[in-house]
Image 1: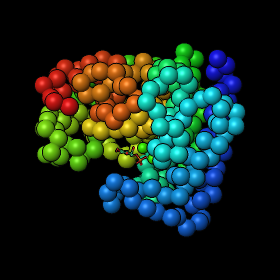
Image 2 (image 1 turned 60 degrees about the vertical axis):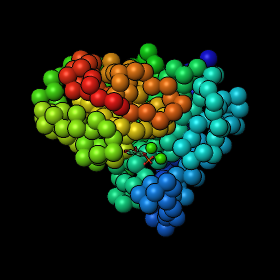
Image 3 (image 1 turned 90 degrees about the vertical axis):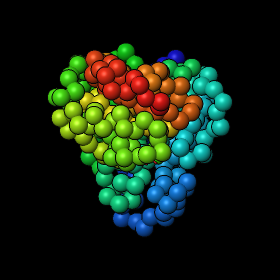
Image 4 (image 1 turned 180 degrees about the vertical axis):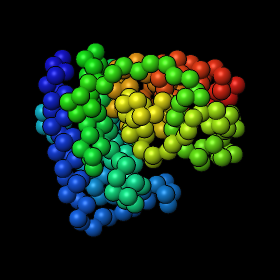
Amino acid sequence: MNWELIYSHAVQWVKEAGENIRLSFDKTLNIQTKSNRNDLVTNIDKETEQFFIDKIRAVYPEHKIMGEEGLGDQLENLDGIVWLIDPIDGTMNFVHQQRNFAISLGVYENGVGKIGLVYDVVHDELYHAIKGHGAFLNDKKIPALHNREVKDSIIALNATWVMENRSIDHHLLIPLARDARGTRSYGSAALELVYIAAGRMDAYISLRLSPWDVAGGAVIVEELGGIVTNLRGEKLDYLSKDSLLVARPGLHQTILHDYLKDGKW
Ligand code: IPD
Ligand code: CA
Ligand code: CA
């Protein structure tokens, strides 16, 4: 498999899609809701997903595509080469703030992440990795991640998860939030993953994410030695929704054992 070629196509298409999204800022958005009134989707989410699908199908007709907006394939397994695409991760930010969102793209072979791209369109920051060849922010190589103690860490989590009383063991997150140096919540899982890769934050916890939220950023974080699992410490399968714990090596183990291990997640 010529991963370098697939990678160069992916980079080219992500940049082009980003340019189209930037141009959309001057136009009126068509905004709709999905599962609830806060679950937003716009014409730009759909157009961007369709843009990738057209590009991929033209060059790689044998590859499969899983996209958030459902314009790709309905997959029952991850056999072969699969592109996992979130055309805009952080749509609420896109609509309300016109920043703090990203295009997320992962290319997987038989369920193993090979290429990860997360493009912060507004800042023109492309985080990218091919498995085994290092991870980069634009042209700059990102250094490997090392352990950090909870008391020195910034941990990304959403306040609504900590308060949420329908999720059984949410209270276990309270001591973690208290012990950490600080907490943050950016509203884009893809960006939160690559912020860990770039050393801007140290861990990220979510109770429920979809494969396309995580697939691109996970390749980048793992390339740097970061650990990506669900809150039970298991590997993700990228076919179903799951919880997520991403952290520096060492810190991941500490959070899992000292804070989360008694929880039903
Ligand atoms: C959402 C963002 C958000 C996360 C949600 C996701 P979307 O993705 O990643 O940070 O908390 O669970 O659904 O809908 O903006 O692509
Ligand atoms: Ca998303
Ligand atoms: Ca999305």
